[in-house]
Image (cartoon, rainbow, N blue to C red; front, side):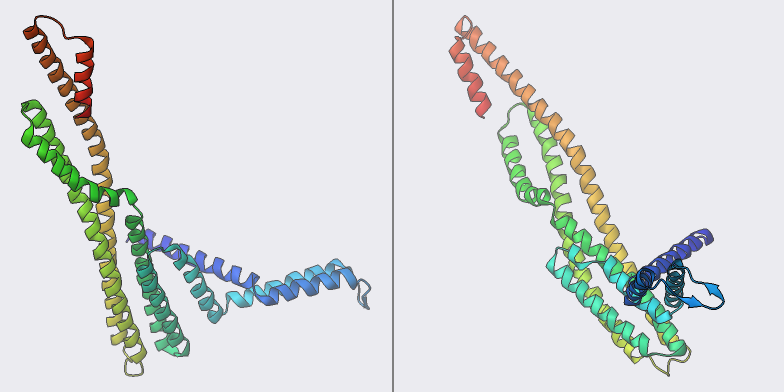
Length: 332
């Protein structure tokens, strides 16, 4: 990442922290009390005698604003409040109610529980150890965010009802086209059917890849949760013996490795989705052309056969025979 990219990321992170803390300060119960007291004084305490100035009712409003400003400033500069606000904002951002797959939701729920326990470990730590654990938790946040992104992709694949139906339908279509190829005598029609068979086989490969990547993603979620539990256990053992931060550095490397594995699975799912979407678009057009070609060839064969029959009979076929032949061809 370039220096400008890093600066942009840091600026965005600071803005997010500031916005979260400001919202937290404005929603505190102390803010409600300040507003209520200010309103009562402004409405009902009008006559205030001061020897050095003439009191104006709007002074209560000014004092209320000043009190709220002090409250907000104290919140913005309170590390404990910042950590609590960010923890709550993180879980709001990655809302488990948006995950429909039951197993994925359970995995994420356990991951959030590990994270809360890690935050408790950091709260009781002091000095450099507290800083190291906070740094590790920052990586854990990224880890869980990747788990959440993977879970959303599992939902997307599982909610694709059309793909599920095609997975059942396409093998039957392949078998049907193979039977038609075996019984087809016209070379041109057989070539069109063979082309259709190739397209259907490609579609089946894509559908099977989608089903396979879902299983891989579910296994990845389970294994990465186990790794998260191991990291939590190791964080619990961090103590005075880790004076040089060597254990913390090893944990940071393990966290990054797990994030990279999750990202690889996410990229693979995105690639399968893109390939499948692109293939479906091409197949729709190709199959439409093939269907039109098969219809045209069938009509041509029918016309040639009727012409031959007419010639051998010494005249045109009656209208009812033509209609009967058209009906028979349409039902084939």
